[in-house]
Image (cartoon, rainbow over all chains, first blue to last red; front, side, top):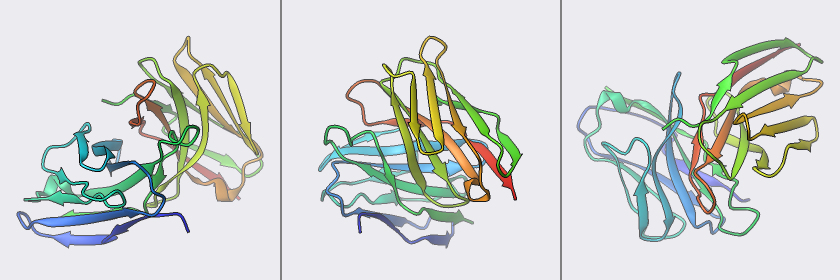
Length: 115
Length: 112
């Protein structure tokens, strides 16, 4: 089944404790992206990647890091989480194939609470 | 930067009625998409309309695009309780771009 998976789905942590949220897709998509969703603010893009070893900042990259060493994986790293990073996080991917590249496929979300 | 803005923020209708949601954006686009999100879940792609199209249909969904007004509307006909969800419009950053900018969404409640 074609899908985007994220782990963990729920995480409660404390300020300053490094964490990684994994994202994996099995559709051989070139493009992957991370968003955060907060009440009243909609979805905001954190980072995106056009292909392996190619990443770039989105609208709200501060406090986050990403890497794209393999095509299928795009982990989101919070080196020193703070309470303002409490949010619902989504990973998404899409293909370069003509006619398909505009549709993004979303993971189920990771609900992160930073105390 | 927030590109698409949906209106209204919340909409409550009776089952069987039509639901109309609007989206306005600020800069030129290549295409506009609508996504649906059930509470706390991932977004699901509904429909895409390109900048050279004015109207598109998919089942009970009808999307219009007015590039002169930089606006789009999503019409759901004969709504069902299962249509209860949040709906987001998303715009791209121009030709060749993969980036999408999402609005804040319209929360639709369909009352049985």
